[in-house]
Image 1 (cartoon, helix red, strand yellow):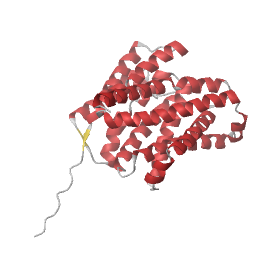
Image 2 (cartoon, helix red, strand yellow):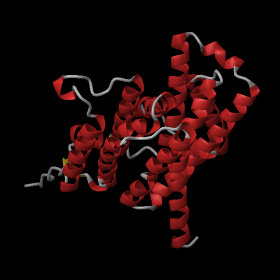
Image 3 (cartoon, one colour):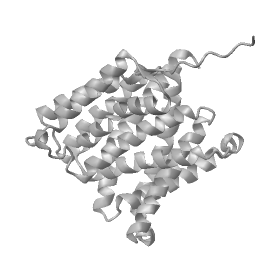
Image 4 (cartoon, one colour):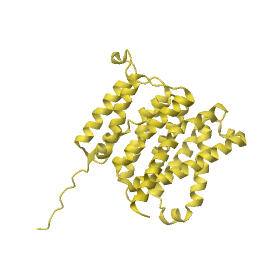
Length: 303
């Protein structure tokens, strides 16, 4: 395959991924209205994804998989990232959830400094400044400067924690560079299924999985196939395109989500929210070269 075709397929793959995640709120919200809660839908969807992924890539996993304790951490972090995001978009305002989630570059800068001892570049400091300013503009309301909480809804905290988990997981994943990408990707599926099962077990509704009607299982099956496909094509796109270009394409998720939320749910943002969101999106656009690796200590030479 020629480089031009590879780049075209990679670009198409990332745009498709952005579109899928921008529309993901709608089927989960629809299933919730039909009595299939988000934890039930998440568990069902990712069990199907796990079954398909293990079946299709069995030889690949058998060749490359090796258990390492940090995989459990990645499973919990990435699992919470996807589970909390799904819970948030199913319950709250779609664009508000996405923009709170897209504060992840701010948390990436913090975790990279703490865990990898990386220093912020000039672009990194600009990302932090734009993220903080955008967050303030987006969340500002009368009384905020007097001590009122900036977030008052449960779904807002879910979105914020999901973005933090995403940033933390990416930093940990960079540190665990010896683990194959395909294995890291699979931890997401198991993680979401774990949190879905844990949520249902805590509420005593785990047995309700048996009451999901056949037509809902059909929707869950389609979602499982779609999520598996997007996992594969997004990994392919990220491995081919430069990080800054991939991030630019992924920002189309905000555009797709704004259009879908307006057309399908009648959700519209205020001018203040648009301005704050633009600053947050601009920060994400500049997040490709936020940090520089920590300088390694010079090796000692023999006398």
